[in-house]
Length: 119
Image 1 (cartoon, rainbow, N blue to C red):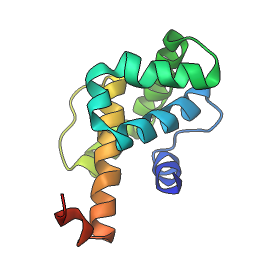
Image 2: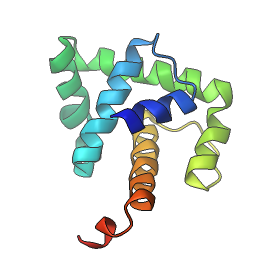
Image 3: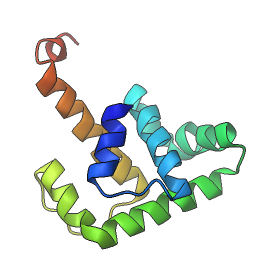
């Protein structure tokens, strides 16, 4: 969780947005089980909505708001740095979650290279 919070801080995503908490939780859920990206509405947004007692549409909207703010404040450059790829278009929220999860997994592999070989 601390690595995720540090990543969001480095991405200049403010805790003042409701979507910050939702994005943080979404990243955790996808880190636990990447297949959740395939059914993001039920497997991620609805789980977050249940936890915060809101509807999944609010979760999705608030994550989009965070994504938009991030994108308009050098998010493109940040994503290109962490992915090593050119990013042409603003990512969908699920893509943003995926980028962050992949980056966190890569950082863990770098910290603990021997454990990443035992799949």
